[in-house]
Length: 151
Image (cartoon, rainbow, N blue to C red):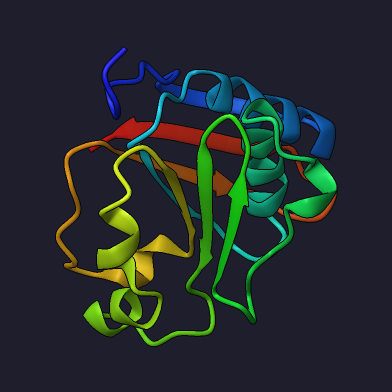
């Protein structure tokens, strides 16, 4: 499969637990071939990092190594594919957020997978076509709704 041409499951999915969110992330990660960009959105506590842990597990990255990069902004991981886990929560909205994490440089690694939490902060930053938008909603003990869209 050509890089960035994965067939991820599209549509609405429900998660009743952190384990289900992790397993859905693992399912998505199993479809990745490199070159994909996953844009994650959702409130604090919706399960974005748990989803990324699952993606990492499918890429042969130890789940305990995948932590929120809220303070480091970018956590690189090496497994079956290189994973760049980015968190834009602490950055201002706009193209400055992309420049703060050197997104242009990361995008040049066409065989890597890039997962961006709080991706809505990129506002207007032009990304390559291999983008998947994943919205997680719900918090606390509520079930999570996970929406997956291409483009």
